[in-house]
Amino acid sequence: MITFERVTKRYPGGTVAVDDLNLEIPDGQTMVLVGPSGCGKTTTLRMINRLIDPSEGRILLDGRDVAQTKAAQLRRGIGYVIQQSGLFPHRTIEDNIATVPLLNGWPKARARNRARELMDLVGLEQAMAGRYPYQLSGGQQQRVGVARALAADPPVLLMDEPFSAVDPIVRASLQDELIRLQAELHKTVVLVTHDVEEAIKVGDQVAVFYPHGKIAQIDTPEHLLGSPADDYVENFLGFDRGIRRLGFFPATGLDLEIETVLSEDATIEQARQAAKRAGESWVLVTDEHRLPRGWAALAELETRDGQQTLRQLTLAPYGHTFRVGQDSLRAALDATILSPTGLAVGVDDQGTVVGITSYERLRTAIQTAEKTDDGQGARPS
Amino acid sequence: MSWAWDNRALLGHYLVQHLYLALLPVLFGIVVAIPVGVMCVRYRWTWPPVLSLTSIFYAMPSLALYLILIDYTGLTDWTVIIPLTLFSLSVLIPNVVDGLRSVPPPVRQAADAMGFGSLRRVVQVELPLAVPVIIAGMRVATVSSISLVSVGQLIGIGGLGYFFIDGVQRDFPTEIYTAFILIIVLALLADSILVLLRRWLTPWEAGRKVRPGSRILTATWPGSSAGGAP
Image (cartoon, rainbow over the protein chains, first blue to last red):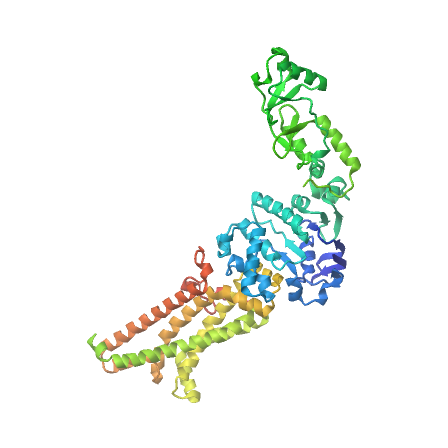
């Protein structure tokens, strides 16, 4: 647990970077500090490991004032990932990762073994161990940065805009990697970013800063999107927050149509009956393994000989699917919007059809989700 | 050339003396310049006076200094070594300071955040990264020093400079050319050794496109804008 008690940071000249801040960061969670540049989020982060000392107030790490521990000692117990990796250019990858164990006086061989373990953990090939940082891509360097921060297995990990210097695709994969690592390691992570999407994606809790060192709102990402505290937060979150919030509701909440899912060996007559019973104008045709093949329109079924099988039909493409057990209502909605039929196919992990959703079914699921929302941000895994 | 062969013992004697008089000042210089440079970066207010001092060292006419020192150190090697040491300091201190300042801020910050103490940070992170710039300074100091030693012959201690005076007095140009060429060869040789030393000390620089301090021109001269005047 990291606790800020009435912390103020004032610079000579009168600039107040952080203004009377109270903040509790619970163990094992990811707390994201987000805000515009100059809002004091980075100052807040750096006060935790004493790269900056507060002017007033105190910061407690597990109940102990950080000012009471020698700075170098304190920092070796707190992982730190810096923007643009900040790797040591003159040290090999494994020696970079082994930095803190070596500072703590581990024998070189043991520190290097530990470095190798961490390379596995963050997804770096062992062949890179002997290379120098300039030989790696930006994304790989950032992975090394994370591995270096984790080397001494600190309970707390501070991340200062860790993914801002890499391109969007690499950034997304690094964010996924962080979520995966965190699910495994349960560190107390404090991450600073100016990217609200990143905050919502990786945070268990998000603290939104006003421009001048005060916090506007601390909440789960889902709650933040659902009920921003004021106009500032709402503006900061950006538009379409309603749709983004659907990302926090699992697609398992959907009541899927199964009646209009037919094997291609079924007859056209059977398909006509099914469509009419369900009141749908499309049926989904699957192969014998229940993998989706495409849509058949009721209008076309009406013109055909009822004794033929669906195999004879030319089908409309089934479009994007969503994975029922893993995706969110947002993904289901997206698949529905993109589908030419206004219907989207839900599949399981093997890609076999679970059922079909429509706008109507999505609407019901969203209403149910809102009613039963416990604010804990039930995140689809 | 037959003259050179016939006098190889004499040439050898002065060659060794020349090297000794030229390299010892650079060695003393670097031993002093590193702690002084570290101090100037750590305590910023010390840099302007130190910079002025190095400019004075650079500007001092060496011949005058020899004559002044004779009163104190007599006709010993020190009379040559001390001025040359001051001269090499005027090149080496600004280079050490520049080298330390060339360490990227994120790297220094990362070192702090990892829990390096300040001495450890200097020794294990900043100085290794400053090596290319420091060696660039050593190359300038070494080549200049090798060339300047001969001036010491005006007071009788000047390594291969002996042959310049002797050649003039005896009106025998072969002597002068031979010593002249030997001094240039020595300078080039010393420079190449320093380049090899840099490569050996900085394996991480091998494949980089921009190599700080890879050319002699990047060395900092006293009073130049790159000297980081306040």
